[in-house]
Amino acid sequence: MERVYSPAGWSVMQAVEEHRSKKGVMHMQVRLGLALFFVGLGAAQAGTVDVTFEKFVAQCAEPEKSEVQRAPREIRVVCDNREVTWMAASPGEIPLPQSRAVSTSILSDKFRVAATSRAVPSVARAGTCHRFEEVVETYSLEMPMTCEDIVGLKVGVEELCAGALDEGKDRNVKAIQTVRTGRVIDTCFPPRQGG
Image 1 (cartoon, helix red, strand yellow):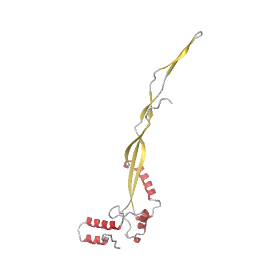
Image 2 (cartoon, one colour; image 1 turned 90 degrees about the vertical axis):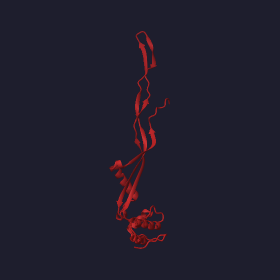
Image 3 (tube, rainbow, N blue to C red; image 1 turned 30 degrees about the horizontal axis):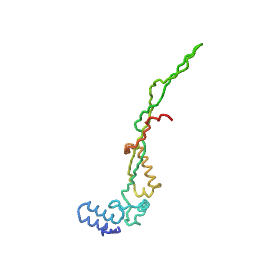
Image 4 (cartoon, rainbow, N blue to C red; image 1 turned 120 degrees about the horizontal axis):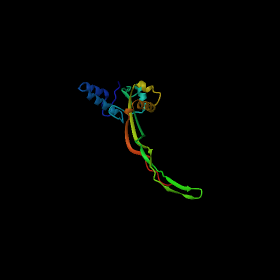
């Protein structure tokens, strides 16, 4: 194994050797983490280094050509889905304006009373109207993979995740977290009078 030196002067080999002389697995993990953290600029957490997907694939395919000289292990592809959508809320009722008029006239063989018309009260009717609530649906999954899986991918990671998320959401609807945003589309308002 090639020695990897950090700016602080610690190497992975030194950290392992120091651990052998002391008790506690945690001590070794912290030292290894520090050594790798200093080697990798922009590390997201101790022991990991931010790289592009292409570099990750290259590390899997030819680990001997990198500084670390080891293929990644314990690989998990983490897929997160966040979807803003609308769902039906409880329907309401909307008054439907109507009017009624009664016209009367009288006809006979000699006389005729002209037609008159007047408004008569009518029973109001109501129609159904719809309400919709905006919600944010989130769903996450992790896929354990090996370097062979990563190198052998025929699609990009985004396509892989999108397909897995769609399939996972269909199979496990209860795992979808739904949060209301408070925004509402409400069609239940009285119609305007006149033109």
